[in-house]
Length: 86
Image 1: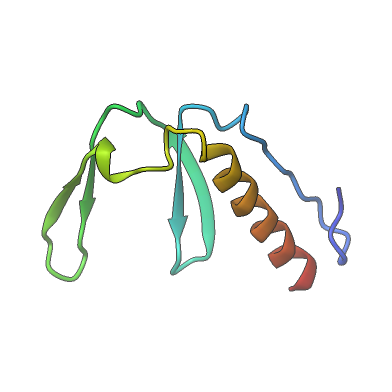
Image 2: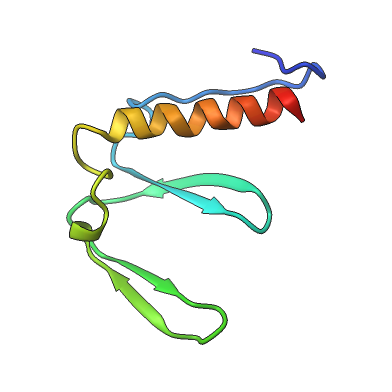
């Protein structure tokens, strides 16, 4: 698939992202993913205060339930639109 400016675009679906945690870097406008066990917790560090917060799997409602495919589709449609219109 090509964008308007002829750059290649790769779209990944829910099978490719099974058991993955999608990460967003808002500062650099980058989306990535990493392996993730849905029953594990995640440590998140606040860069301003240095405080480390523990986010449990119960705090990530869409990561491991039936809504996950819809969230993933939304993320990649948003990414596609970003590439097409920028």
